[in-house]
Length: 154
Image (cartoon, rainbow, N blue to C red):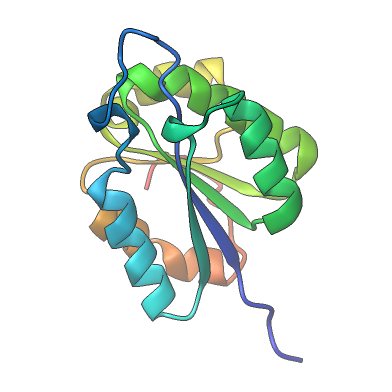
């Protein structure tokens, strides 16, 4: 029997601070495009969801996307200004789709991994450093459906 194609959702969370706005605040980080292109080139069903530009409640927009996409892996590009929206979305994801693997990557998780794990146990893995390299190198484990038993860092 053929293994189903994994569905991947890459998320740029919304910054909840109204002082941080404008065109630059709504741009998807280039790293998500690199990761998305790499995944698509290798046959993964990959979409990018930009919550930074959401006109309505970003968690509500995220929940709608989950219902439609039903992703196997949800990866967030997390910076300090958007970390709380990422946490809220990760919590919502585990309620809606508990089998989904939640990954946080970016500058905030690289330096705040213990803090993020403590405030959001819904996070399965944190990618530290250059995610474009580390994220892809970790895919063999995900393709086999394996989860890490000893470490939550990639």
